[in-house]
Length: 143
Image (cartoon, rainbow, N blue to C red; front, side, top):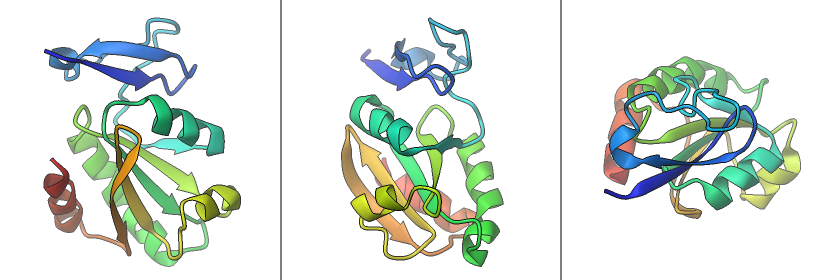
C-alpha cells in the first residue's frame, strides 16, 4: 500500500506514514507529536504553503475571520467533522484578517470559504457556512 506524507503540526517535519497506519494515531519521527490531531490546525501563511506543497493527505482549509458571524457559527461544526474524518483529510483554518495577503493569493472573496487541496492542487471550493450534514456531503463528494 502507498505511503502518505504528513507535515508535523508541531515541528513542520515531513513524515512518511504507511497509508494502512493512518488510523493508528501516527506520531512525528522527530518530535513525537501527534501527526493527525482531532482539532483543525491553526495555520499561518508559511505553514499553509508547506502543507500545500508537501502534504499528500487531502487538505481542507477554512478561510475565516474573527469578526465574521457565519464563520463563528460554522467553527464548531468544522471542528466536529474534522474529528470524524481524521485520517482521511487534514483540516486547517486560516484567519484571513491576520493573513490578508494569503487570502488574496487564494482569491478569497467571501468568508467562510472552504478549499480542498489534493496533491497541491485546488480541487473544490465552497463559500458560505455549512451545516454538519452539508459539510459531510461536501467531503464525501471529494473521495
